[in-house]
Amino acid sequence: MQEASASSVLGDFDDAKYQYLGVESRFFRRDGKFMVRTDGPDGKLADFEIKYSFGVTPLQQYLIEFPGGRLQALSIAWDTRPKSAGGQRWFHLYPGERITHEDPLHWTGLYQNWNLQCAACHSTNLKKGYDAAGDTYRTTFSEINVACEACHGPGSRHVAWARRDRPQGDKGLVKATMNVCAACHARRSTISEEGQPGAPLEDTHRLALLTSPSYHADGQQREEDYTWGSFLQSKMFQRGVTCMDCHEPHALKLRVEGNALCVRCHDGAVFDTAKHHFHEAGTKGAQCVECHMPAQNYMVVDPRRDHSMRIPRPDLSASLDSPNACTQCHAGRKPEWAAAAMDQRYGKKWRDRWHYGATLHAGATQGVKALPALLALAEDPAAPPIVQATAVALAQPHVRPGDLPAARRLLTSAD
Image 1 (tube, helix red, strand yellow):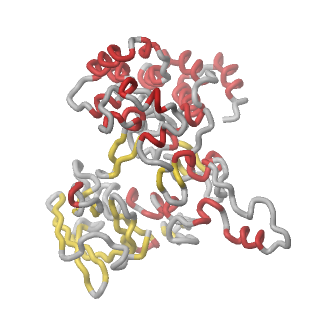
Image 2 (tube, rainbow, N blue to C red):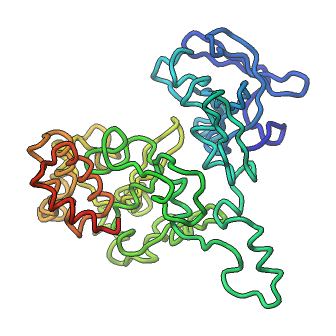
Image 3 (tube, rainbow, N blue to C red):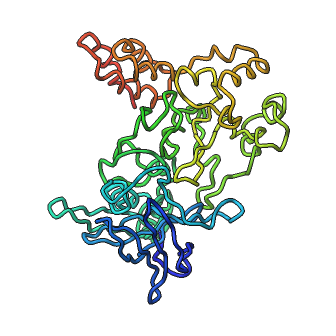
């Protein structure tokens, strides 16, 4: 997030035009300011000043100031990718939908309100400052975007540490743990703004569970899930792998590019070979992430990888109505084709691997009939805790007095 200026604004404001639902929006400059003429809260065309740019790559949005302390995110965004990749153009974030000024998804509506929807993860030490009586905001932040204190806590603690005669210990900084990442890289709702960096997410937020429409029945990402709920399902997380093992948090880059990242832990002689992936070396299909972390586009042009790092299960796609990495890449092929291909290459034992997706799908579709399986899953120590919690949530409408012993046992869980 940056104040709108010639250096921060990447979009074409040289009298560029864009059509959506019969409305022609125009991007231009006036007296040194960046402006857009588009449909406002009443559906009529009006001129609006761009207050802030929001984002850098692969797209950039623009924030417009409204009365009551509101900042609203324009739904027409600039594709910052190179022209060769389809970028350098204006595009709408809801290209297949009819979003008018009467829709809460309209850029002037509730769901495009920066104060409520975006700000907490894009600025440091943000306080929404919402006044219910006046329906207004007095939103404040220490830094306009994500800065050191967002992860390491108040800098004043570090200064106090440095002024000691013989400074020792944590240097007055919060240790960068995965809880720091989770606060923003999770689909969740906020319970309290008073949490400190590094505190457990559940102290201040309510994590979204693996239910529809946010997730597919087997826990794969469907909507914008921000990776944390996916990562909690992974064997990597269960065995102590952290975000920082793969991601360099200060450079915002991977530790190593390509399969070299995976073989830092996994035996490349076993897994980074055609005998394992059955694709030609150097091709897309030979990349570990294409099979185990398939990507899905959000905001039209922003690909994000599913962090559950799972083995593809095309055999479950038909019964669970869930995607699989094989047919996502081999477009036009059916899951049955992919499953048969895996049979030829790996034998059929892979089909026998238990997967919690079948139980969660039953819980979402079969009602009370699925209760015994849900309670069994909820008490299964081998299942990831987020899966156990999802089973509890799906079981809740059907529990009876006879299920109280199971509930009591679940209450002893650290999760």
